[in-house]
Every structure is written in C-alpha cells, then in structure tokens.
Image (tube, rainbow, N blue to C red):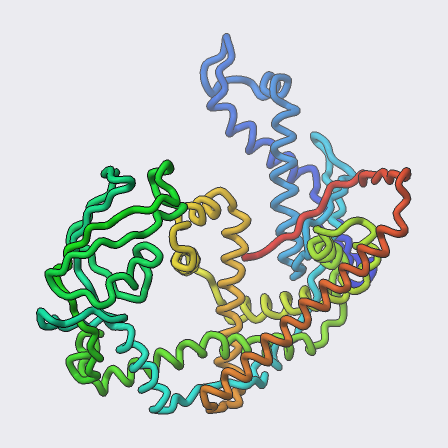
Length: 476
C-alpha cells in the first residue's frame, strides 16, 4: 500500500491510496478459498468446485465484499500511520478498481486540530468549603425535633386543643342513611392539620376521653361516591383518647433514634449534611470556572464541518429565517463548544480516562432516584434510545475529565460562611437566569422580524446535496 498525503486547505487533507493488483488478487484468492468449502453445486463434491465456476457464479458478489473489506482496512491504516484523527466521516472517491486491477482511491478528510493541554496542569479556580456555625447546626436539630411527633396521654379530664392527637371511632350518615366508607375505627387526627375533612378538626377542640359528639362536615369534590359529593354528613364520634403534644427533648436518646451514636455525633452528621447541601453547587461553580479558562486556550482552527453540525443543533427549533439571522452568534458559540470539547477529549485520551458500564448504570440509577414513581418510564427511555444513553456516557466522561483537571490544577481554597455560600450561589443563579432571558429576547426579536419579512405566497424548496451526508464520529 502506498499513501500520499496532500494538504488541500488548513485541516482538509486528501490521502491518495494505491494498492497493487497482486495484493488485491491475494485478497480475492483468500475469499474464494473461504467460500469454496461452503458452496454446494450440483455435480461437484464439497470443496472441489473449480475457481472458474465460482467466479462465474459469485464473481461480482465476491469482489464487492473484498473491495469493501480492503477499503475499510486500508483507509483506517492510512489514517493511523499518518496520525490523522478525522473530524467526521471521511469521503471516499474511487479512481481505479476492478478484478485483476490495481486499486486507487482518494480519501478526503478534515483533520482534528492539534490542541495544547499542558496549561491545564496549572489552571486556576476557586474551591470553596463552607464553615458551618454551631448555632446553625443547633437550629437544624431543633427543626428536626419540632417535626418529630411526640404525644403524651392526658388525664380523663384533659380537653383537646390545637396540636393534640385525638383518637376516635366514628359512624357517618347522609340524610340518615349509611354509605360506603362511613365507618372508621381508631382514627387518629392531629388537630389543626386539617387532614380529614375541612372544618372537622375545629369541632373536636374541647372534647375529652369517652366523650360522644356529633360532627357535621361536607364531603369533598374527590369523594369516591360521586352522588354524595358536596353533601353534608353527620359523624357520630366516640373519643378514645386525647394525647397532648410534648416538646421533644434533645439529648443522646433523641440522637440515637435518628441513627447517631450520641448528641455530639448527631451534630457532626448534621453539620456535614448542611455542608453537602452546598458542596455540589459550589463544585459546579469551580468546574464552570475551569471551563471558562479552557475557552481562553487558543486553537488555531476549528473544523468547519463540526461547526456546521453544531449550528444545526443550536438552531434546530428555529425557522429558516430565525436560523439565518442568528447564524453568526451560533457559529461563535459552536466554535467555543467544539474547541472546549476537543481540549477535554485530548486531556481524557492523554490521561487514559475511561467510562465503565458500571459508571453509566450508576448515573441511570441516580436519575431514577430523582424521578420517584416514574422509574419504569425513565428506564424504558434509555433502553429504547441508545443515543440518549451515549449522551449520558458523554456527560459522565466530561465529569471525570473535569474532576481530573481539578486534581491537577491550582485551587484557590476559600473557607466561607453559610451566608456567603448562599450569596455566591444566588448571584450565580441570577447571572444564569439573566443569560437565559437574554437568549429568549433575541429569539423573540428574531421571530418578530421574520414574521414581518415572511411572504405568505412564497414557498422555498430546498435542494438535496448529491453527496453522502457525513456523520460525526465520536471515539467514546
């Protein structure tokens, strides 16, 4: 095989590849020997069919398979030997081919540019840790204690008040008649929470153990028996007990009930919990800083075919007029995205960063936990959409790369208070929201302008390109 590389323009290259006919014939001989043993023709024993007979019967098909195999093998080898990483699918132009002939073809390829990643080892970013004040931890523990139910049985004369737990049996009627679900045994209600029927709780205020009381309440809109909706029901109630709410004592026993060793251990756990609530968001800010620094790294040229594909993605929900008006903005954004992706990929390859199947599945499980009740739907989506799973793999890959860059970079470590962390995140969110609103406004203006310029009777017909559509190739 002879390969000649010609630079056409910038990253565009033509590889002229020549394979002599002797080599092609050896591939053909190999293929005929392979099919010889499996072909059954009348009048010939298996494996004894003459070459000429096979050639007459299967010549075109055999040559087609051999040509396809040789093109794949030699084009891959030519790119590897010349250290060319293609940006997208190369185009192939056959010049000379045929049985007992030399094979000559041209492989037109856009090469991925060489990118510099050494500066990533000294990349600077802010790394935050939140110092949690003891009073903040105590405040959180008090909130937990407040939400822990703790009731103590009152005396027979204890009158129920708001916040107390009342247990009762009841039998209800509408217009003097029983109905489905009209009886309840040992029903427990925390007065004031209105978890049963509207106005029911307040009528229990003042009752004592063993009291009997008739309570009237309107059945709600979502009542199962539709003919009884909005009807007034009478509930004959027998009060079984009145328990008074009691403040939970924050001590070692309280801590043990929450899974801690003691109160001191609980404070440590709560402090870590509060810190973790900020950690992911603050880590993301650090990674955003790294991405901004990566954007500053110079790349001499970005492959035009990748820019075109990215622009299509950015403008896919827009009309033709909108896309045209915003083309320059999208091209600039596409170049930044592609440049960042090239640098991250180069870093990932140089540092042999890989994504395992277990890591992808762990990310799927993480998404399942974020959507309780919709687990089957999410799982089905990923099973039926391999491209979505590939995108998820890409997200995990980028996350691993950014984490590795963080480890190698120079962190400006900052210890901040909870209030400072909240302000930093609030400002960052406000900035993100401002950018989103700005994008929406650009789109609105573009839509209004397009609507004015649009001619109702004109219909544009797109011409289809004659060549094959090239596809973006991802190594991961």
